[in-house]
Figure (cartoon, rainbow, N blue to C red):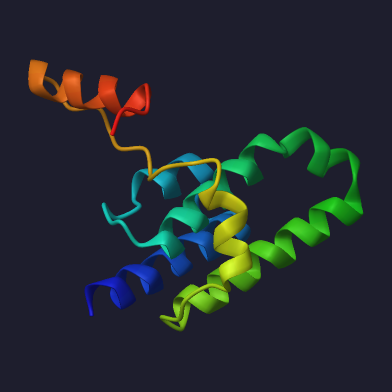
Length: 120
């Protein structure tokens, strides 16, 4: 049940970015701490959205495609459903997890360091 509620919440965050009610950064900071691949996928789709700002400005067709893609992600998550495997697979190969706010302390430093160098 928690995964479904988290998906719905993230879907609303994606819509908030698309309608310019939130910046990408504001939305990303609100993402729940979860291992749900659907939420991780939405997180990284928003990261790419932000990174492509220059391209979006220059290429109207690219901007429309990316907006439609994010809207599909938002609609699916708002319904509490899973994203298609091919969409999850697009991001799963390159990224692991969702970035978390930095926590102080030696133990947390070691955890983040190990995560950063991909030791599992």
